[in-house]
Length: 293
Image 1 (tube, rainbow, N blue to C red):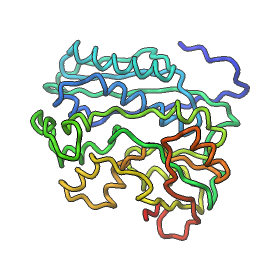
Image 2 (cartoon, helix red, strand yellow):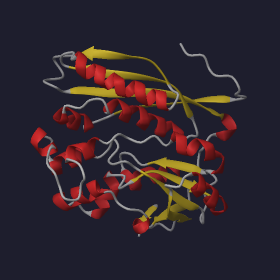
Image 3 (tube, helix red, strand yellow):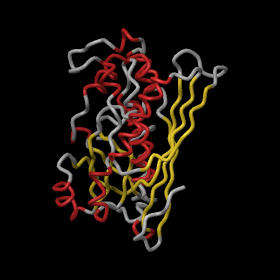
Image 4 (cartoon, rainbow, N blue to C red):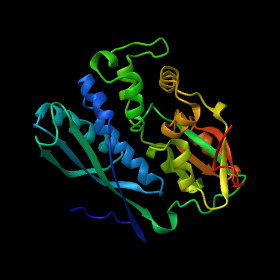
């Protein structure tokens, strides 16, 4: 049970469910499981943040072939730490042992979050119009998406994860395991100046941004407006991945896209020094709703 906080006139509950995906394969190869709990909590927090909601409580689901108390303890450690960081109650979960489905060190991790927002403060993007500014907040890495392609290119064995490349300051496995970033602390103080948010997850720029845009609008993104993280350049180079595919699969160094009136940009960037102006909203002329220039 969870008692709703007071102070809301017309509270609306916002929920989301997601999983860590095949990033768990990297965690298994590295023998490091204390960050994937952070991933699923922060991913979930960011998902409901796109509606303007702040988290209330979180539940987890862990499934594996044979219960490994050490792995479970490490996962829960990450879950607990991430929930504390965003003042979200970790109210429970389920740990399932299914030897007929999971084998060896395989396991799965999913999370369920419920948040709250005042009804008249829901972010829906309907007021976004041509001429509005598009800002981007940096990611820490792949976050929780694109790992099937990344593993295909870079491998997933312990030796592959220990490999060092001149463009990375850590073994590649550590770069791939960097936790998903939560944008709640950055955006909560300025949500009143924001028209819409797009969490760049599975589907990259091309799939996630249009979900926020109202009909008749598109965005022009300036690819040179921010520094693409070295891990993405490495995947593209080794795998020979086309640039369009990179922006369709990965966040490319931008984890959250912010839409705002140009008059609000100065205040937003003062509050969020890491933000970059990465583009502008335009009229949809039929040439695609996300135009990468």
